[in-house]
Image (cartoon, rainbow, N blue to C red; front, side, top):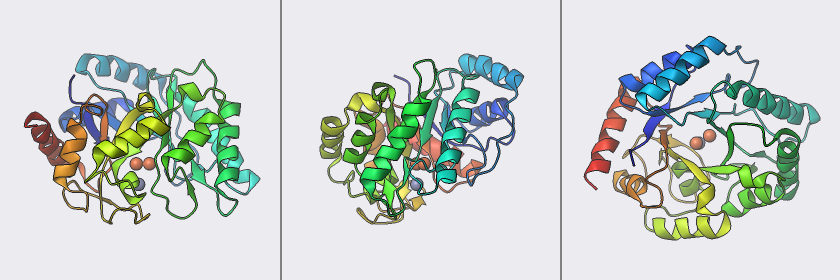
Length: 279
Ligand code: FE
Ligand code: FE
Ligand code: ZN
């Protein structure tokens, strides 16, 4: 299968602009924030722009696109207004994504802010139970987290617990972030096969729908979540080359969230294509 590689792009100019930017840097997938990542109201989506993009994406072989929920979305918050913002934001995001059928929607499960992981898991699955319907054409993904602060989803077991408590859990997928799992204590450098075996036994590899491809500034199990450019961190180019070429991962879409401008992303995508071709 074709190598699906791209990066995070600004959504300020709309869908068509993102599609054209992706093509200009050699990407065939991309991620974007559904709205300001630090919160606030979303700009309305222009249905004509979304429609034009869908035709362009089909023509150029772009997709799946990955919409990322804002960082401020915290379904596990202690305050009701925080949880209500999370719920109304996700519902609104999913409604908008119906204009681009077949998209992925990734969110950070949340931070339990001292209430404990069990309470956090119950709050997150509770929100999903109120929002998810079989009618949505978008696949919702839980992101693997680094375990910074009180983040829920710090290990595969916590993600599994959210899915188990969600009625439509069969339709919920997972986005694996290489920086986050490494920071969370999964040694993808020396034991990628072992990590994938654990993922498979706890979550099922069929749930893995996307990879955030990032190096990490910190050592394994640091629980810090500081992304680095490919080869500029503690994971390193060789280990990330094994990730994109692994038989169980290679058909998934890969999204860079490395600290880059567009030229940096263009160079990183070119590098990864070389590492893929030479494997
Ligand atoms: Fe994320
Ligand atoms: Fe990520
Ligand atoms: Zn991160």
